[in-house]
Amino acid sequence: MIIKPRTRGFICLTAHPEGTALNIKNQIDYVRSKGTIANGPKKVLVIGASTGFGISSRIAAAFGSGAATIGVFFEKPAAEGKPGTAGWYNSAAFEKEAQNAGLYAKSINGDAFSDEIKKQTIDLIKKDLGTVDLVVYSLASPRRTHPKTGVAYASVLKPIGQPFENKTVDFHSGVVSDITINPIDSQEDIDNTIAVMGGEDWKFWMEDLHNAGVLADNVKTVAYSYIGPELTFPIYRNGTIGQAKNDLEATTGTINNILKDINGQAFVSVNKALVTQSSSAIPVVPLYISLLYKVMKQKGIHEGTIEQMYRLFKERMYTENGEIALDNEGRIRVDDWEMRDDVQAEVAQLWKEATTENLEQISDIEGYRNDFFNLFGFNFNEINYDADTNEVVNIPSI
Image (cartoon, rainbow, N blue to C red):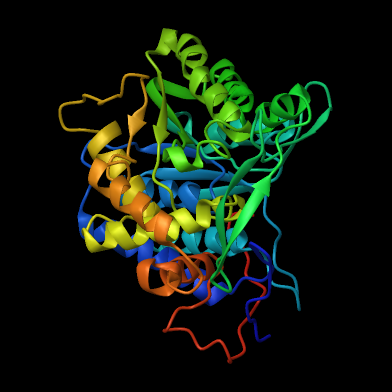
């Protein structure tokens, strides 16, 4: 079939198998160009492995460190006349590239919050790998059904205490407008968001993996977080999502206790603001990212997800001397370039100036759009989007 992008707000409803495969290959080529992560992981489980930081983590481990990888995700497979999701196509392309390189790669498609998928993953590790030495937790979902109680929770994206008023942009049209987001109605909004996006599920995974004996001695586990600039604090870090991120970050202490007997370590990595399916949904953030991209590209310090994950592994988690640099809160920071004083000062000035009329000149809104559509396999010059493509692509291990 011929597949073109169809969008609804911040969501792209279609994905292109050839374009997503090219996106994966480009990331693999980047890692290969940078060289081996000498002390990197060898057997890796990535939970939330199909898009964004998750798929880039899997690529960095496999092609940077020669790691065998198991990926867990929840994606819609392709069917005749109906394209699969971008994450499905990403995972199919990754597995094929890994197999061509002689690397072990298998995937599990299902609800990672469920006990059933945890057990299925543990059984696969026991059967094929024995143990894993790195667990990446990169799960992003708006909803979660609690595996012990069966209660379904939905996260909310709201400020706390008072309405949030600021600029935002429709990145499709480039129209800058004012937005007002009303605060939470009750503590329940915070509790539900923490239940979905906090650290409990990460803890459940590490408990189950540890109890099953499938974690190697000196295992490491990392989950991903974000802080960002003060201008986004009301909607992000000081809002409901931020409360969930606080909970996630606090969970490292609990997991370190779980892993104490095998000398395991849990970390949170604070990553850079990037165009992902999740970040596109947050008001204000697309405008901030488009201005940030402009500044960081001019300074030659822009990174995408693959550059971030390669740097995380090579320069933070698996250094030659074995030391891991942490901030005062015990977090790894690969948002350090984004948060540089000179970068933030320039972004803050551009923020004040940004209007619909000047946005194309003072921001990289075009780069934002391009990155967004690249996530779904579109906007690659090498792909002929007017040509028929085979929408039915299988993941070899599923």
